[in-house]
Length: 211
Image 1 (spheres, rainbow, N blue to C red):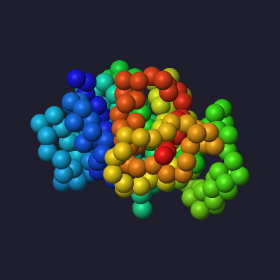
Image 2: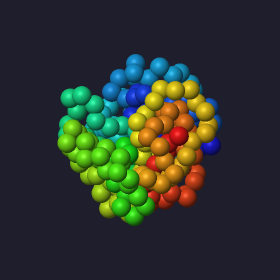
Image 3: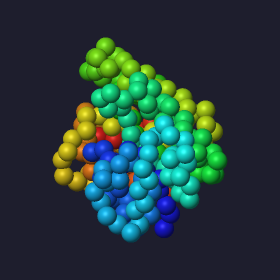
Image 4: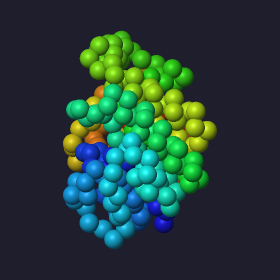
């Protein structure tokens, strides 16, 4: 079974990614500021301490992997360009190690003009995001530019409002305003992220996962 490098594994969505990846039989290499932040214990799990902006730590996580799942993002007190700069650091490591595949998580506010058909409510939400969290939205757009410029095999999975609800295995994959709702459970979202490791249906696209 392949090895997956995970960034953001200590977060509420990342923990589901780790659990499901290990349950599926993958070997997993995860970056964490402190090993104590990863509560899962499994012989197929390798925890490397460091920061996503630390090129050496990122390099050690990516080395030996065949794909990357990136679910890290801004938290209180983080740099305004964390996702952009961290994605660049990951991409540079992927290039060095020949790892082409990355699946990155972003919010539903990140626009996809080619596929989205926003309704009035969707436009209002985006305006509110630009007013209340402009830096977060700019960072999401910056990380997408890094991926597009990399020339590698990326998919950005967008999630609307994330909920800590039990896994259902039932969700929709669409676009803003097209076969989509306003929420999704983290466990279901993690399943879709993991499926993209082997699935190329959404290569170079930004699917929205929701209930």
